[in-house]
Image (cartoon, rainbow, N blue to C red):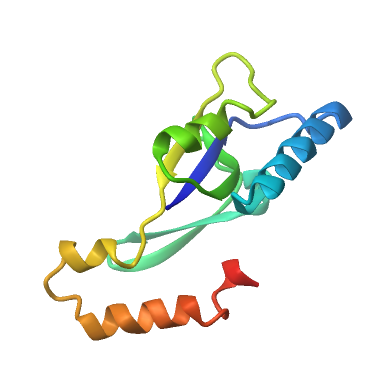
Length: 142
């Protein structure tokens, strides 16, 4: 199973210290050596992004910063884990905890999850999705 570890932040967030960067690098290396790390990145502040929403039947783009947001995604990891408890074990190793900070852990949906949820998802569509992921062309496999 894959899990996404979502690091929440508020803005303006101070840049990480060199000690924090070193500690995060150590955790990333530990995850690589354990064979669980599939990907992970920090995100730039919302002032460099945009939100796209449907309003009145039209797509509306709102440029950042997102001052109305109480918490934003500041970064993420995607890991392989056999259970939610195992994923939480990796979260507990994150070195950046400050009072009030929160990290969310969610299982990433697999194509097979939709076979049972929707009658209209055909076996052919599921097979095509699985073949694409198995082909080595899916981004997480590069």
